[in-house]
Picture 1 (spheres, rainbow, N blue to C red):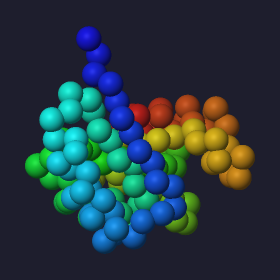
Picture 2: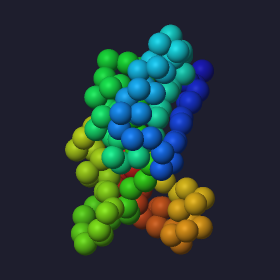
Picture 3: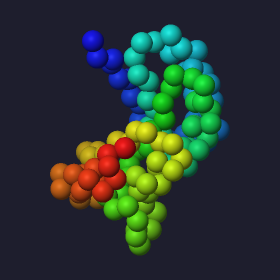
Picture 4: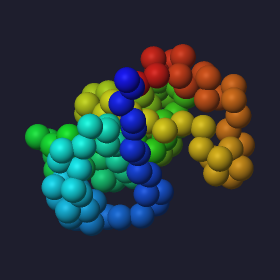
Length: 118
């Protein structure tokens, strides 16, 4: 039987200290779950969330990644960058990214291809 995935994405909310506090409070609540628990956090929280979630069953993911591996894309983050800090999950194809930034199925597919779909 497949494991169920419980994933949370808190958009553009929570500062690093709030993320760490949330993870510390969530940890005992999901300690014995058979489900996969993933928190997709803002980029500024990734480092702190990864450290705080160490030795727990909570996995940390990113909320977005650029479709190119590198280049002059100010403020963007590539899959290579995410992998370098041991991020294993990323959400791509958000409805709001499509609405506000004109992302398309093609850019999402391109990102998966160039970034080897972390």
